[in-house]
Amino acid sequence: IERADFDGIERLALVTGGDITSTFDHPDQVKLGYCDLIEKVIIGEDTPIKFSGVAAGQACIIILRGATAQLLDEAERSLHDA
Image (cartoon, rainbow, N blue to C red):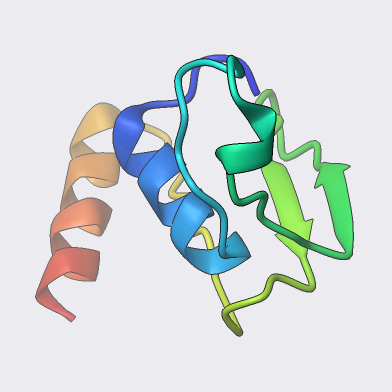
């Protein structure tokens, strides 16, 4: 996965049931996560990755789009307030 921030990696590890590791020196000591399907979804110019059938139930992503930065900021604030 390219350009993943640490918060995203933590959430992915949580929902797939896997461990976060920075090296594979001892692969037998790493708990691998699981999901049924990994898809690259095209939404406008963005291509988020969708993980389906994760071990820990449900996970979701919310993509906000707006005509201007001001509208997008307002939508993000509304989402946080909800």
